[in-house]
Image (tube, rainbow, N blue to C red):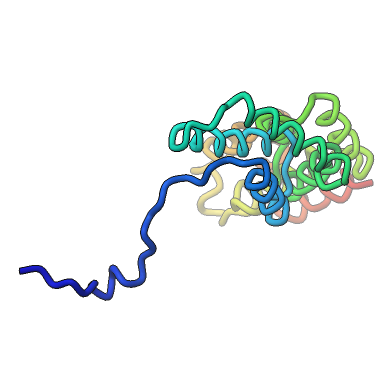
Length: 200
């Protein structure tokens, strides 16, 4: 005989339902909800919405071509209303990645993966170069400090971990010369001097 009452674990769970039907209203609400939570590019938002259409097509037989047309209309409306701006997204994302210690090569790859046009990526990187004389130096130092590489390590570990530290910075897309200058710096103060010089 089975007990018809749910266990405490089952009471808190919602019954899983299939994907919702991808109507124009549903897709627009999904786009607005995503934009409310995250900054994104037009191409990335289109991919996310198309995934919803694909799920709906499998579950409800939604027409994929009709869904793609609805998505295009929604994206046009969002661009017209200023809610979706690839230029602004590229500039903001580039600044954010730079502050985290990402190289120009890494920023370029990240924005390209999000579907930002090449000319907008270059414009965003130009904006970074206008803010500081050498943004690569600043980003490499931020990354080295955050990961405690080179002069940010204890003296006992520096020689032992030198090659590993150089490889870590190199994999992030920084040039060999810049990596060597940072890793071989005598102390963190010398690195900070390089960073100050790069800002001017």
